[in-house]
Length: 117
Ligand code: SF4
Ligand code: F3S
Image (cartoon, rainbow, N blue to C red; front, top):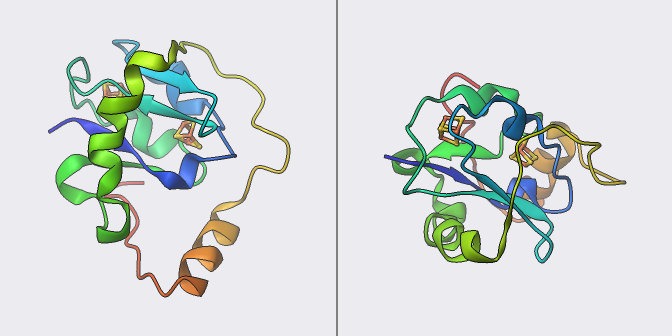
């Protein structure tokens, strides 16, 4: 049951998640600009979920339907990522959670927030 970073992270990349991961399994990707989780190393500790300002991280069995493809995409993208273990500045123009939710509504998506976020 690894954790999965969804499209909510793309072009925001707050990186709070990387600072708390006890097994350092978070990788930074440039295209798309986001982080992903190595599913083979994640120990399902749940710590990163509450840290993300845009609630981009879900347990794999809880990923909302519109974001299901990110389960495989995290695994696929890890090999071209750089291990990220510290918090950094978010990207310029990083969205707020309200803005993310508004974009989802415009796309006609009904997205539940991650448990205990
Ligand atoms: Fe790291 Fe825990 Fe998040 Fe997995 S659930 S990515 S181990 S902080
Ligand atoms: Fe992305 Fe949230 Fe981490 S925006 S970098 S998953 S804190």
